[in-house]
Length: 495
Image (cartoon, rainbow, N blue to C red; front, side, top):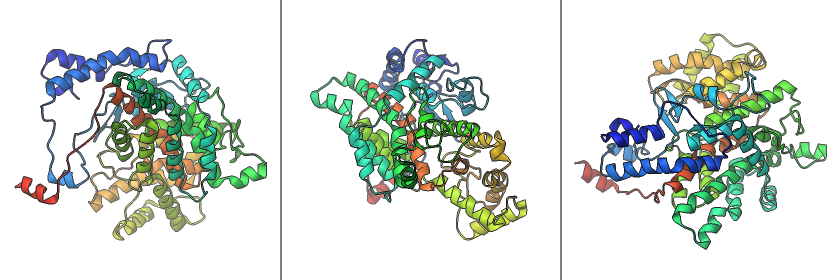
């Protein structure tokens, strides 16, 4: 990104090699995540400071009145290193596509060589933070570290248990994450007085502790909100247990009661179904972790963090943004749309209707002034590669592809709806986005509580904004403070 517009050959070379190399860099064997990060800070910081020094007075874009009044869409005004969203190619992580990441990022140590196994979100977090591919041994150790730090403090469990079951799951999640501020190492160190150069180390530790505790938070919310009857019938207080020999996503699934071992297995999963559900969680969390910095949850985390709020308070703000209907609730809207369409077109039947009937139904939706959820994107102008990955997950499993009519509707809709939307002519992107497929897959595995989908999204999204928050403190980024202007000033400046 920078190297294309930088005239200084030495600086361009430094930036390109530091940030945007097309070659994969592998982490040094034996180093843990923090040590790996420490080893790359000097070079990256040097490149950042050079760009800041030599190009601070250069213009990188224009701001129109439409952008100012239209949600700042498309304005190039945020620094975000780990991912770039291309309108035509989709998301890239350190210049690598989703398909490429699936090839080189490590999987669970228990499923090495399994073609259906998905790379771990831990691998993605390591890669996002460092730009380096971790070894299998490093990921194994990182998974273990997260598991060792996963237990919630008693006060946080007590707070969650005291909340009414009718409280929105995302509100519960935000409350729990905010409460963990009680144990923030950064907040305590800052209060005592620490050098600015040392901020990042405490932020790093808070980030790891927070990510580690998200599976337990998600599980506690699910059981308190939806599964108290099951707990009473089983005379137990937990849907599942922490397994310190397993990865982060496995423990999310276990805390939800959806693993064959270590949990109540509330949906009676077979060994294969249990493994597949865990891999769905892995895929979902890895794909949803980072999507540039301008989306509401990522930007809110960065914005609040820029005031030197600790990672718990910062990400709690991100979670509240994620709870908004325009950001994180699309997957549940798709599930409602698909289940309603199935009911109206085939009733209790288990066969898809004709393409003609589906097209007719879609036109009835559009002609009534409604939208087809799961289609279109604020930035993308081509099919979302994340949807492709979710679709391929289902197609690779006969129990879904051949036997789940809801998934079959999603697949068929992805073939039919773009033509209808193109003919309709009111969308810039008629293709399915990631929300078009993710919710139905969770629905397939028994999570029927659609309001809860966003909690899993909340676990996932931590990977991107929180890794950037560490870099914000490493690089000493200032508090965010854009200038606001009134309508009269806008009109005056526009003349």
